[in-house]
Image (cartoon, rainbow, N blue to C red; front, top):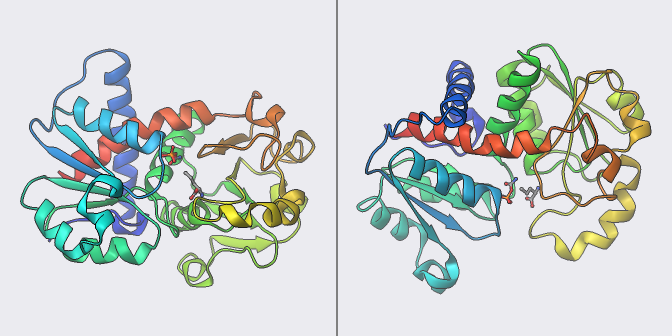
Length: 298
Ligand code: CP
Ligand code: NVA
């Protein structure tokens, strides 16, 4: 059976934990300049239907450092953009490359792609999930604070793709996730129900953040929601992560954001550029955690 990585739930909890440990080893090898080319000759195709800096660069660097090769594909200059069905693209690419990463809009498109692919398919972000970012976030927490099991994690803002992947992570790694979001912008109840017991939703940001070990937010308007940005700005304002709110979290709380960030919208410059923010480590860990993922899938 071909293994895909469309959501975190495609891994067993022990596999996720092993990936995090392996990511830390790979990071050490990288820092000490003793990298091993463990997947020579393997080819990763990367289809981006949305923009990307971190995901594109980290996957391309990752497969190169493992001894393989990455191919960047955009709908603008492939037949995907001219209407060739994903089912056909999936069957063709499986004859030529070893793994595919797809960043797209509807999660259902990823599922359709994977159903026709007998090589591993990785979700590089969909409207509903962003599991690769969670690998990096969980690696970052583990490196800086140890096991996340039983800790309080607070998500502030939109119940979006990142929030959904945090919900999956909460049940897999057994931490307590408190989500504070405006009414009508809460996470999907179906995704929440898979993590009942590990997730609660509150409307009061101060209550949500109290004693948190990790505070996380994301943009208020995701890719594809640009036309809602002005309306969202007003609704989400009380959920901004600022220094006054951060004071209510645990003294050693960390702040994470998948980036790109909008300073002084979802997070103040003071917080994201301050001492509790680990966003640069978090972004850098995209490289190491995705190398661990590629090794696992290939
Ligand atoms: N965090 C993240 O996925 O960033 P990019 O959109 O730059 O890939
Ligand atoms: N929620 C954001 C994440 C970007 C990495 C988006 O989907 O645009």
